[in-house]
Picture: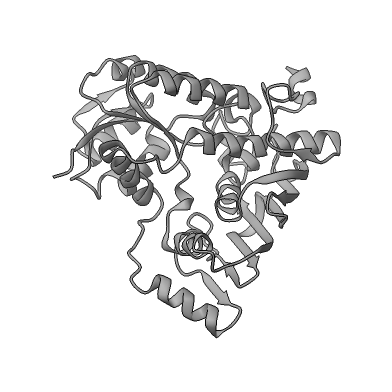
Length: 362
């Protein structure tokens, strides 16, 4: 029988999706016993909806609860680092929504804190979970796809002034970035998850759609460690919302579904080069078992890692690579130059990717 881990969800906005998709369907794995939120109405409403026995506005109170196994941080981005540090110091396992922190230096601090803690830290990259992306990864890892040639990744969403009426959104100090940080970060992670590491990146970043501090349009070219090329684009001004990945390998071409918020789900197009490759793919996938989707895939995988002692499904090192790319986007756009990866502690934006003009204005 699986051990039931007790969870405190901190932040009822995105936290609601964690409960609905990641915890409530798995009562044999998780029990959400605490909800923490500063909004009284949301706290009471969600507490009643999900029959959560303990409701509090105090994060310090949550930290002191001895029976809590996991603290799930779903607060605005600017609060992530101090909350994760405090939760790790309290010996709790921690799940944290994206972005994990506001600089590569901050992520390195969190990695160091995790090493000293009894708890484990898992950043959220729920788009990795879905049968479409997992089948593609299985084909690639089996060596069937062959040499990677080219990829395209698009995050074409729409956000209006109403979205940015929430006080912490659209500001460097509290959202930490724009379309790169809070929207395209998942699709970019998926591309790296399938295509491997980036070694060089050139980008243009601008604000064209909304009257906000942060960017809402991006275009970039990546050189992958394998030698493959990737083109990435993102906007918050698309009249139809889609997320789309297309990956061209020697033996297979993959294309994701176009669902904006669940591109990892089936169906994915899997186009083999010939009948022999098709037969190998069919044999590999013949007894495929559903992987779980979004939070419903990632949260149970975290439970398995904690209780069985296996590797974490997503690590702080994964988040570091993701935020290195974000840093490279901003630095390349500012300098007009290619930026090589990985980034070390002597990089000028190691302690923060905020554009120089934005930092000077404060």
